[in-house]
Image (cartoon, rainbow, N blue to C red; front, side):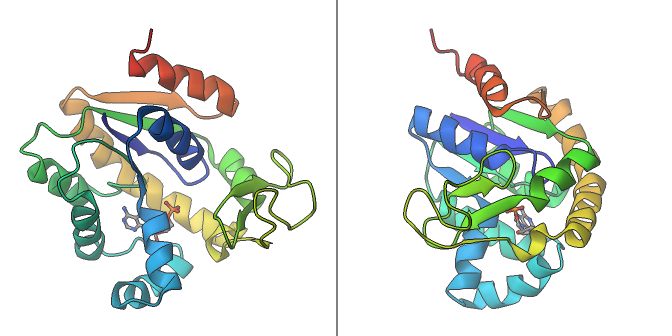
Length: 210
Ligand code: AMP
């Protein structure tokens, strides 16, 4: 399976990607997660990426492309989440695979009001990365992870002003990307306003399981 999940932040790509990748036994590769690890361990890439990420800007293409190409190595199955986000990234992925790489691209659609309400309530565990939502998926004890007891925090880039900036950037970049994949005939649109279970069932339908 070689799938790509596109769409604005907060559309549920990460949640769905984790489940589908596990079902299929392929790595879930989230460029946001990879970059946060680089930032956390203060690598050269992490130091460069941090200022862009904190302000909701995209990290420059050359840095992200190099990181993803290294992570993909010679893998023949993957679920990419949050990459590509620009046409240059899509072209780099396409070139790497001689054009026969990505099998399907899912564009998660969600309006801005819903994006803001979902992201501003999002909380992440500092220790294990598990995600919660203060209204839709609260932890049992406030600010404590149900899985590991770690501390839950709100990402700096999940604050409302940064969210608005991130969604504008995402929208600006989305047009040419969608056109690129539409022309290849591999683009599917997902209505991400529905419940996670309903979206999951729809995605499972594309897996071709009996
Ligand atoms: P995410 O967790 O996918 O929302 O990503 C968090 C932040 O990481 C984004 O706001 C960007 O600053 C950066 N980022 C993640 N993926 C990419 C990408 N494919 N290209 C450029 N920047 C990215």
